[in-house]
Image (tube, rainbow, N blue to C red; front, side, top):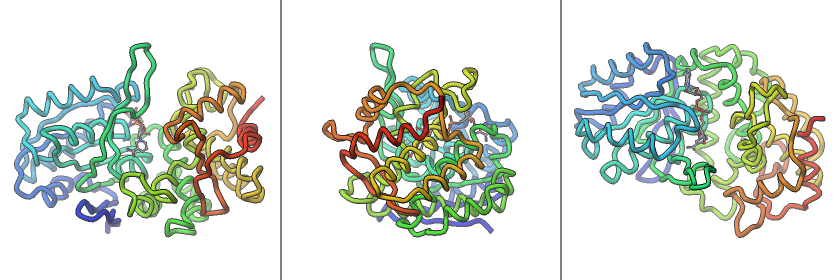
Amino acid sequence: MPRVVRIEIGARTYEVIIGAGLVRTLGGMVSEVTPARRAAALVFDTALPTGLVEEAAGSLAGAGYEVTRIGAVGDEGHKSLGALEAILAAMEASRLERGDPVVALGGGVVGDVAGFAAAVYRRGTVLVQCPTTLLAMVDASVGGKTGVNLRLGDGTTVKNAVGAFHQPRRVAIDVMALGSLPERAFRCGLAECVKHGMLGGDLGDAGLLEHLESGVERVLAREAGALVELIARNVAVKAAAIGGDEREEAAVGGRALLNLGHTFGHAMEPMAGLSPDGDARRAPLQHGEAVGLGLVAACATAEAMGRIGPGLGERVRALLTRCGLPTRVRGLPGDEVLLAAMAHDKKARGGRLRLVLPGGAGRAEVVTDPPREAVVRGLGAIRSA
Ligand SMILES: NC(=O)c1ccc[n+]([C@@H]2O[C@H](COP(=O)([O-])OP(=O)(O)OC[C@H]3O[C@@H](n4cnc5c(N)ncnc54)[C@H](O)[C@@H]3O)[C@@H](O)[C@H]2O)c1
C-alpha cells in the first residue's frame, strides 16, 4: 500500500503519495485533482529511460488527457530563463488552458523549472510533481519553491534568483523511478536525509537519524520497502517545517531550519575546482555533496561554541561516510574567501551571517553572527591537506 503524507497549508493542503510502481497509475492520481480537465503537459527529464516517460504519458492518456510531451534537460546549466521560455512556448503551442495540469517528471532541476512554468503560465496553472531523483523525492518536489537561476551580464550566475512559491496540487513519488538514477546522484539525496535526521527531534521524528543509521545498506541497495519508509519519514519532517511557515517568514524555527548545512554548502558549490575525492574529473561538487560537508562543518562550529558535545559531529561524519559522501575536501580556499562567500548567501540578512546550527541530536536553531573563530573551526573540520 502506498504511504500518504499530507502537507497542511490551509486551502493549499495537498497529499504526497509514496509507493512502488505508482507511475502506472499517474493518470488517475492527476485526474483526481483535476477532474474536469482534458489536456495535460508532461514536462520530462530527457535523461530518463524512454520506458518511464512512455508509461507516464500512457497513464495520463488512459485517464483521458490529451498529452503534450515537453523534454527538458536536467542539468543546473539548463535551469534558466531560456529553458523556462521553451517550456512555456510548448505549452502555448498546445493551447493548454489555465487549470490544465503540468506534470513535472524529473529531478530537482526539471521540477523547479516546470514548477515555475506552471506558476506563471496564464498567471498560474495546476502543478503535479512526479520526482525521479532521491533528492527531489525527499526535498525539492515538496514545499512549493519553484524557480530558475539568473545569468548576469558579466557571465556569473545567481542560483534560484527568479522564482515563485507555487504549491503542487499533488506529489506522486514512485521509488521504482530511482532504478536508473546514477549512483552519485542517488548518494547526493542521502545528504538531505541525514539533514532531516538531524532536525527530526524538533519536527516530529526523533528517531529518524537512528533509523537511517540502522538501515543505510538497504537504502543503498535501493530496496523498495526501505526507500518508501525513508522517503515518507523525510517528507513528513519537511511537512512539519513547512506547516505554519509556507513562505519561510517565521522569526523562529520553521522552514529556515531546512537550511542546516546549506550556508556552508552554497559557498563551496560554485567553486569549480572542488571535487568529492580530489579527482578533478569529478569536479565540481554536487549539491548533496556540498550539503553533507556543510553538515559536518555546522556540527564542528556548534561544538566550538559549546552548543553540542563531540558525539554528534562524529556520528554525522560516520553516517555520511557510510552513505558514500565526502566529509573532507581538498583545495578549499582560505577562510576569508569562504567566510565572504557565506556572507553573500541569501540566508544572510543585512550583511549579518545567519547559520543554522545543531543544538543536540534532532535539534537545531538559527544563530545570527556566530563567533568567527567557531566558524573557522567548522571549516577546519572539512579541510583536507
Ligand atoms: N524547490 C526546492 O525546494 C528545492 C530543494 C532542493 C533542491 N532544489 C534544486 O534541485 C536541483 C537538484 O536536483 P537533483 O539533485 O534532483 O538534480 P538534477 O535534477 O540535476 O538530476 C540529477 C541528474 O540525474 C538525471 N536524472 C534524474 N532522474 C533520473 C533517473 N530516474 N534516471 C536517470 N537519470 C536521472 C538528471 O537528468 C540529472 O542529470 C538544484 O537545482 C536545486 O537547487 C530545489
